[in-house]
Length: 416
View 1 (tube, one colour):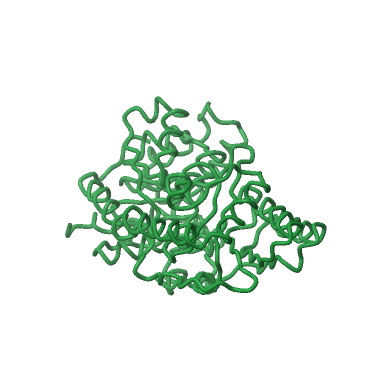
View 2 (spheres, one colour; view 1 turned 60 degrees about the vertical axis):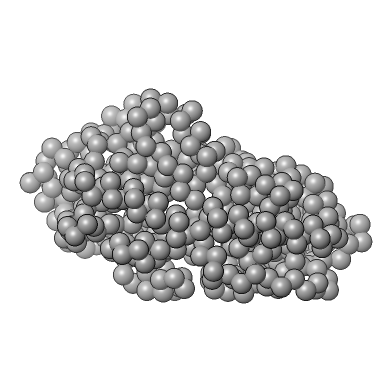
C-alpha cells in the first residue's frame, strides 16, 4: 500500500471531542499499524480537549466549515467550473430525496456546503478514502465530498444517528464501500429498517476497543461508605435519573453509599433538582465533565460502575465506551437491557443487567454487588476477560485495516 490510497481521512462533526474517546483510540491504533490517517473536523474542535493517545489531535485536524475564508467559496467555484456533474449531482440528491421531509432535505443542502472544501482538502493531501464517524452529518458530508473528489467512503454508525437522525440512510448504506456498527443489534436494525439498501451492502461489526494493557485491574478495597460511579453525557437516554431514584431508595433502606456522576449535558439542571428533591445531596456528586485522563483516575477509587441507559423516542445507546473502560479496569458493572449492551454485559456472567427505567431493580442489583464480594470479583474477572478477547482496540484496528485495504483497490465509491 505505497500509493495515495494508503492515506485515509477520518471525518467527524467535531474531532476530537471530549465524549468520543473511542474515535481517537481507533485512529491512534490504526496509526500504530502503519496507516496514514488524517483528521477532518467539520466544525472547529475545542483545542482544550486532550486525549492521552493523541494529545495534538485538535491542532492537526483540518476544518471543513470555514465560511469566512475565501478558500471555502473558491472550492465551490472550482467544482462548478471543473466538475459540474458531480457538484450539481450532490445538490440534486439533497433536493430530490423523496423519502425525506423538506426540512431534512434543506438541512442536507446546508451540510453539502462543507463538502467542496473537504473534497479539496482530500485532494490536496492525496487522500484515497474517507471514513466518517456517526452516520448523520459527518457521513452526509463524507458521501458528497467523496463524490466530488472521485474516491470511496465508508462510515461508522453508532446510536442516535441510527435510531433517530437517519437522514439519507438508505442512500448512505447503498453507496458506501462498507458500513461499520458496534453491535449485532445494530446490524439487525439496519437490515430490518433499510432492507433494499442493505441487500447488497457490506455492514460489519467492529467493536469499540480499549487497550486493556493500559488499564490496571482495580485492587478492590472496600471504601467507607462504598462508592458507585457513572459516566456519560447528561442526556435522558443515559438514564441517570433512574440512578438518582435508585440511590434514594437505597438511602431509605439505610444502605450507606456514595455516588459520583461524571458528565455534562442538557439534563444537568434537572438532575441537580432531582438530587435536591429526593434528599440525596449527601449521597450523590454531579462532578461535571472531566478530561479522559481524569475520568480514568476514578476507576481505582470506586466499588461498582453503573450504566442505566434507557430508550426515548427510539433513541438509545449503542455500547457505551465507558462500560468497556470500567470492565477493563476490573470493576463489577450494572447496566440495562438496551440495544447492544447485553452483548458486553452478560447477566450473571460479566455483570448484572436490569430493565431500563426501573429504579427498584437497579437499586437491588447495586445492593447485591455491594453485599457479595465473591460475586463482584467473579463478574469483574469475567468482564475484563471478555474485553480482552472481544473488545481489544488492536483487534478492532486490524479488522478496520483489512476493510480499508479494500478501499485501496477502489478509487471511486459506488454511485451516490
